[in-house]
Image (cartoon, rainbow, N blue to C red; front, side, top):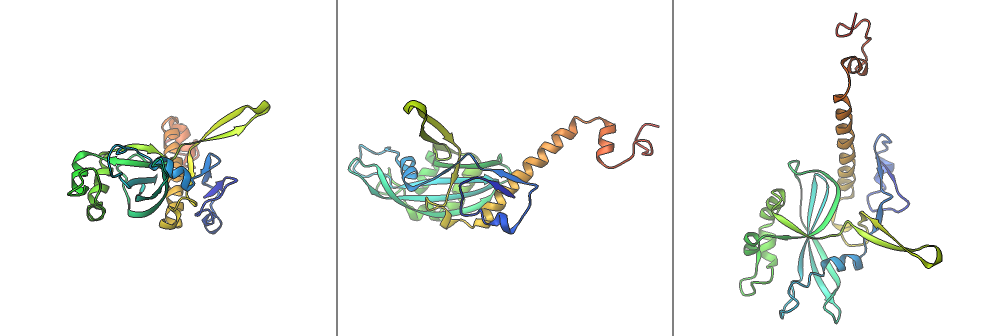
Length: 237
């Protein structure tokens, strides 16, 4: 797979190891996902009126049909109770081909009430219990496969502001997060995510070819398979 992007990410070096120019990843729509940007998305303020703030957040990454579920724990806040730092750990990595494939999506997610009751603290109904989360991670993965969750914040969309002519402010939306600076890169095998991207573009390419073939005439299909129309028993005499 060949990657087109002036920016780099932690898995890019594999394009020099597994050279294949038949698949191209145009990643020019990328942006560097920093810890500061991540903190903005982890700021839920759901419990701002309570004495304790939920410090545990679920982050879901999908590339093609590969999934990574992370637990991001807020470790520092400013005077306005906005997150300023966090630590993140990988809960589970799996594949699910029953779900719609995506090039990449990265979201902060919430689970429903039924799942929440399984992982909440006994004495603090509004807070997660980390040990219960770890023990029930397979159940959480099954709920994701069943689309039984909601997206609280989409991290894979970021607006960049640039100065234009006459001090005009130009805004550009970027949709492919580079993961090397947010803490996620240390938790993912770079070969796994590289192959997941390659699988996505390979499947998209195969799907497009099948769609094009559906519109071909019988003679065109015969020619595509290398037969001579004059000699082929399926061709016209």
